[in-house]
Image 1 (cartoon, rainbow, N blue to C red):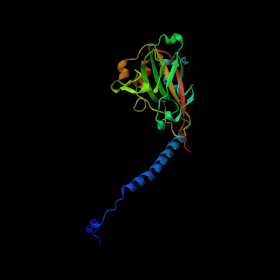
Image 2: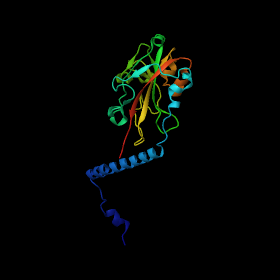
Image 3: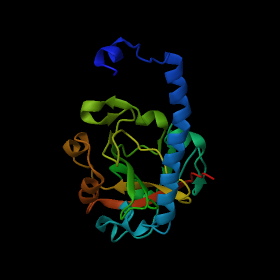
Image 4: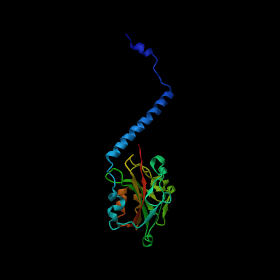
Length: 237
């Protein structure tokens, strides 16, 4: 009969660290593929759930008398709208935010007191568009923003290097880069530029305003808007 003393006297099998590393390396691709299968399955189930433009920021009540865009928005980096976003602009490639530039009609430009930018994905398989970024307090003389402008200047005040403020998107951070579901098709990312006749409340902006707070705050202040669209698709076969 084998006693506990017998077992306690036997050496415990220990794998060398190299074996643990080998097991981890061999397991990682399996887990990654399993995650991809789950993601692709979700895409298949939710393929028709897309196209929620009617719920985008520029369709909110504040824009009731501004149905048509009158501000021309483009990207010096990516070209005119709609533009395909390169690998460096999606999550896996680093998530660089595209540079934007815009022009407004003279009768509007002279009355602008502030600009607001809201970034949304209306093709996400959710009831409402995903908010990828909210940026308020942009100076009236500003006509272009670059990636460096979105670097954090003072986190305690939600202030960016460009002199404006960032709000709350779907995820933490200044900007949520595109990452559409695998095989869900092409997603559009709407960079909406809004001209305001009055500045937004600074306390609200410094406290990291939500998309909903911004939509309420711009009521009665909208002079016009424009949108630049970047597109992105993730495939797996």
